[in-house]
Image 1 (cartoon, rainbow, N blue to C red):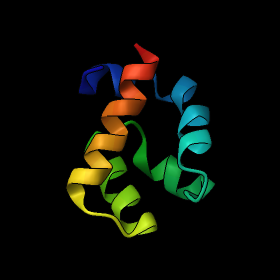
Image 2: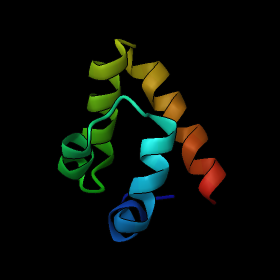
Image 3: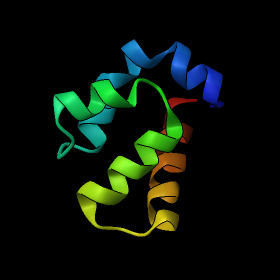
Length: 66
């Protein structure tokens, strides 16, 4: 999934983001607004993980959606 697809499908994907990363608040999910870089940062911040691990989680999530 590319950045444009993420932004374009964000309304449908918000629920899957909340399922995968349940510690993200509704406000944080709204702030992400389909921006992959913001999603990456929020996951790192909320879960206290390195960028590489957050990137890996996002890639796994994206692969499940394809």
